[in-house]
Image 1: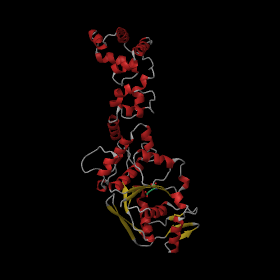
Image 2: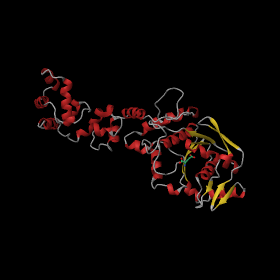
Image 3: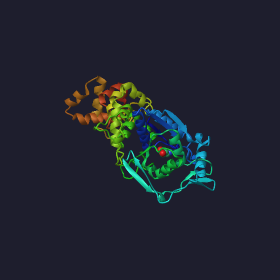
Image 4: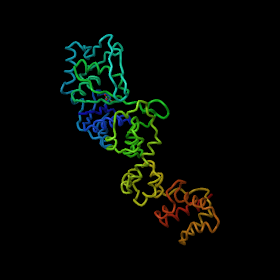
Length: 402
Ligand code: GLU
């Protein structure tokens, strides 16, 4: 039975790389009809951020990454499992007390190795290079190394999948598996996600937190699809995946060895795709947090133009907020348009009769009515605004001293 886990530390926010780890671990388990476990690794209590645990759960839930079992290490610590494990190693002479803490003993001149199922290579260390890591801190809490090994064993984890930054910790874990006489799970590390400007993605450079992407108006489906392809590739060139489709297609052989670069254009493309796949009523609800006044009739006018949900504010805000009068617009155009509208005449026909360039004419109206050059189709927008409001806006620019 395949059993995987996602083991975040609740330190504040979910990194896009963390979501990817969770997603791949979920797919690995579910592809094999196995179990996906969520384990909160909060034994470093100084780093814990209040509310972070709940937020993490909300996000995973939102993305459909539903866990089958749930554990919190600080709660498990109450049962003394980690203390007993550390004591067991001390008793066997494989660890030693060090001023209230317990440290791992390292054998001299040996080699330790494992085969990484994600990176598809064997990685080895000389034991002389491995530090005598602390296993139990003087506050009685285990360190990550001890807790992760004890828990992965007790929770019957078959495959450990985690970020590449944990590779240096792996030899410590391998020794612990050996010392305890535990079976070593399959271990795989995921490549680093690179920032387009170079280097690893980092909080400082932005673009890393899943919440940030959500609040900018990216849909979970789009973020998920984007993250699916940030380090994994299907056998064909398929690009569109729902979570279920990904689970079906997932094969660890598709995990890539080179570091992917976060390409936000690609994310925009996915987001546009998933926005257009929504019904108008669904989209209405999704846009409301960004533009509460939005109405159903406006949705078809902006649907094809949205890259993110938050752009609805820029594209459709003018329906609800009258733009400031525009300086320097062609007053002849504005005057004639206002008269034509009052008389119920066709604007294009009127402008053609006067031999005006239609592009210039309508751009002038667009600026006066919508306050910007990039807007939904003008005629439909005027219909939604209504005759009175349209005229008011035209006259505001007309009467504005140039
Ligand atoms: N608690 C570690 C983290 O925050 C988990 C590493 C692992 O999966 O072993 O990423």
